[in-house]
Length: 275
Image (cartoon, rainbow, N blue to C red; front, side, top):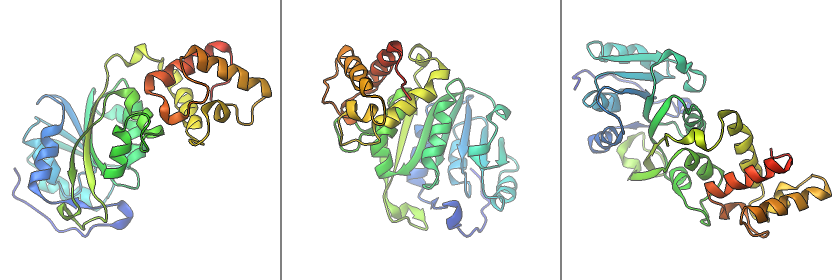
């Protein structure tokens, strides 16, 4: 563990709320599903609290930090440690610069957390697992089951890649400055058999299809998917629902990931536009 520390005023524009309680910091580090020699990338190391805990578990570490004021201080603090810091917006960071498969960890900024998560998971050939902290309500949506009020597009998106687990909740008082809401840590280990589900070039149209299905979640799926389409589209969609074992009155929140995949496949095989 490092002895050095440094002063830094949290920046609201960067979504900075620094986790300060060692109990939660260590629990996050212990939750990362990786061997000591695996490639681990921390997103948004901030002042380096989680970085220290991760270095106690892993032989080396890669960090991507957006705040250009923090990076020189982090490099100085960890000058004697096997960690590489990149100053970049992770959403635009070129992942070909780092080894794979990658295990991600981090306390994600609330204003960009979902986008960061999507970038990690869509990189299916490089991502092995993610262990992230986000708003509690977002994590609940990620982990929720079909037919629940929290179940939506983000649930289907994440559960396509594996089974997310809500590990523990982190109260506002564990941060500086304290946020106004609870946070939660979740882990998702990427399913190694993903290629048998869909070819990588079908991920974008599949998720666009699911997104359209949830665009009017209170309406029956048959109506939503044929919205603004030709009158005959409704019959094609109802036939695909029937072939998929889904009742015609079903709504988007009633379909599991496997049901969405089956419906997408049946519609695609029928020649219908599915995105």
